Length: 256
Figure 1 (cartoon, rainbow, N blue to C red):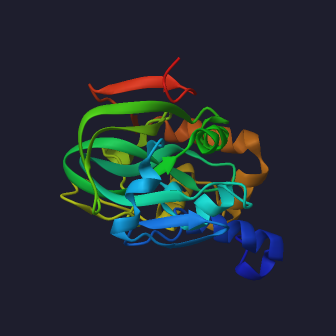
Figure 2 (cartoon, rainbow, N blue to C red):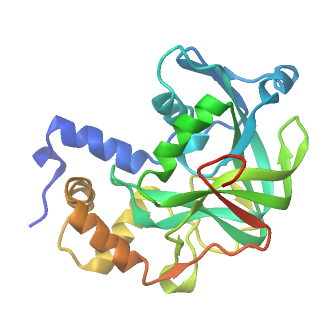
């Protein structure tokens, strides 16, 4: 018998809201994070916030002010410009792993026909050092650079290369095709997109767990062994990231 929403504790409801909410609110414009809040980034104000910064492509929840504010709490951080961009030849798809907070995370995947709307986070050295553990700590991603790309910043320059966190698990590809995030806008998609709750339900059904999707999420959060077993199941239908202009950098923004 599956449990209904009334069987969840208030703490569980918070966990479920975070898991199902991924990748969270994504604005339709560039924005600036500063002093514990965020606001629209005016085109004329953007250029100074790119100086002496590393452009890091955000493909999942790092597009959201909610997530950036979660990762950079307090007033000691300098402002972070998060600029909307259009990246040609790629899409944002679900990775073949489940996060410690119960969501199925995002990863970048080459897609010849697609132009995807993403964000570039301009990080100084201290911010990049703080971002690394949030992305690299569970070995689900590796820091890398994409060269010779077509990336147009909103109201800004074209970038010939950009840094990003490349997924190690590969793209979750049930039926042979990766699954884009419906929450992320794109043109010319060649694969059918799903939302976060739908893809979690799909994985749960494919495992025939007899759990409700809520129970599935909560058990992924509370049980590392189950979460790892589910990753192994997801990796049976996966596509690796394969691009000729990718350079793996490790944890140093300049390479190791």
